[in-house]
Image (tube, rainbow, N blue to C red; front, top):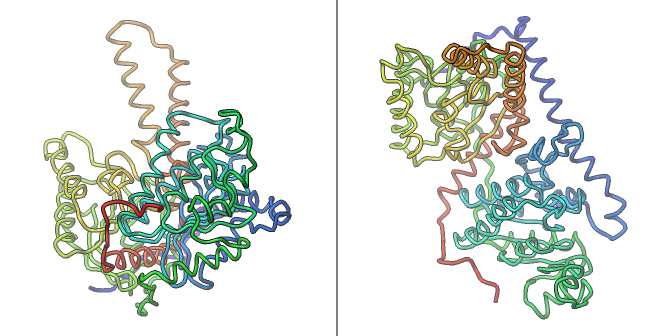
Length: 537
């Protein structure tokens, strides 16, 4: 490998303009995250009055101090749970991420019960299930801090109820796969919320605060006429002494968290080791804020991005003169070998062929693949159709779909059309998937979609001999462009859980180093699956 020599002029007007635009998007992202944090903090007096810690304080106490924590899906629900973007509180009422607990990398999910009593939202369900899937695939102990009022009955939808059962299915699969599930019940866990501790391997309940029941006192009275207090029906002492739901009883939130840390500490699980010092990139990662173009129609050499992510900016280009708009090569990130596939334009037949071959080679050597998405899609036109674009693109998708090595996707710029698929978009199940704030994802550009439908409308008018309503057509074009543009942005797609979170481009290297270490540990730690999840006796 040889160091890539950057050609970017960091003092140029273009670079300065791009950096300013990216920093503005990052600031907008942070303000949305802060909106959720402030909404949660607004309940501080209420929590303090009952001697409870706020959800974010619980997470802070659970995690090892000074160790990295990777938040996940912080914008979940933005534009989904509430269509008013000015009032929507992102995060899905769940605080989630991967961090260290007693030296062990764990998936941590906490109900943000300071927001609408922790009622499960559509985005919250999706976020929780995605975190469970990540924990299962990467063999991460799942630590769940629960306090949930259950589903929001005012927003009941039968389809959400049916799909929401996946969170319980995933809990059973985690246990059966030998991945421990540790749950702290901090407050009420009603209806579906009761099955969260019920399907856990270790349950800790806070005396005087935690309650778990399939039907709370109001529903019980409405359904059967029976009258019981919340403590009688599902309090901590009842579950510890009579039902057997709880293994451990805590005096308060802090005590419960200390018990959870002790449980994780007792597990024979690999402890995260400090990584060997790897050579930092020769090109400054801070320059990623200006190195990436914000307008997808403008070209960028993605090797400039790679040079600011990989160890020593060292890069081994694979077939650089063949299918040159598709860039493939080998590098290392924090000592971890990776194959990188990215785009300097549309994917043509030669590029698809090169990428397919490279995917097979990475599988042969067991090398994880990093996809840096920046493509307008598979190339179109008579010449490309004659050259077999369909079959060559299909060959790339075949290789990707059946690849056996871990794959990580970063949406760096454009992700249009089938290029999203060929470059390991969400539907192709990358192990982790993140977006930069400037990323744009769509089946095509809004203007192209509007122009396509205009051509169809004009052709139809010619065939039928009917006059075309130009005003109506113009309004339709404007609506289509606005709809496509609204849905293409990274905040919208992340709000709909189409990635695992939006990250600051300058954090790309540490994020990748973190998840590559998780992947390496999962591959080295032996699995001890059993036929069923551990039942509660």
